[in-house]
Every structure is written in C-alpha cells, then in structure tokens.
Image (cartoon, rainbow, N blue to C red):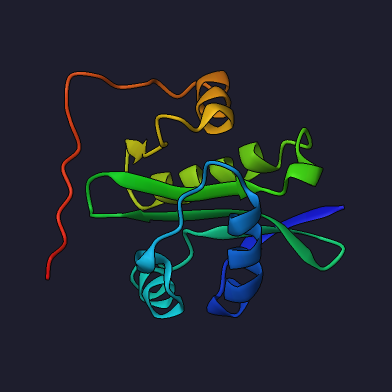
Length: 139
C-alpha cells in the first residue's frame, strides 16, 4: 500500500538515491541537502513523497512565487511505475497550490527525457512553445 505524505529534509538521502535511479532526471548542485532544506522551508507543505513498505518510491518538489506554481523532480521508482504514484503526487501538490490561490503551474522537462515527456503529455499538461528559458549562474 502506498502512502502520500509531506516531504521532510529527513527524506533527503533516500530521495537522492531515487533521483539517481530515474533516467532523465537531472540532478545538480542546486539539489544539495542545504538547498533542498531551504526550498522546503520556503514552500511549506507543498512537496510530497510516496512511501511503500517504508521506502520512498516517488517524489515531487513543488513551490510557488505568489502567482505561479512550479514543479520539479517528479520521480517514480522504475520498479513501481503504472501504479498512478506520479498522478497522486501531482494531484496532492496541485490541490495545495489551489488552496494557496495559485491558478497556474509550470514544470520543466528535459527535451530528451522520453519517459517524462510522455507522462506529462498523457496526463493533460500542455507543452508550451514560443519562448525560451535562459539560465545564468548568480555568482
């Protein structure tokens, strides 16, 4: 049986193991334990994990800037797919965003992440076009 619960920083090591297992999920220095802890503190109650038999089998990082929601690192253990874990995690996060008055949510998927792109398209997310994402290191 799977349980969806709020993510805590105590989940970090197990989350990193899962993220490393999921093809197409990019992990960077921004995913350090201290940065994830800051993210969870800044966005309380918006990120979730799925547990099955005491092990984390799914994650979603979610936050907002006051006007738009953002989702990162939706990951489901490849051995646990086809159980609607990703859908349940997304639904929990979207319900929480709606409760905070956020009416639109964005997410980023790497272009070559076939599984991720297929998942998001299959659950009704619209692939956007007409703009580019630019990134720069702050320091």
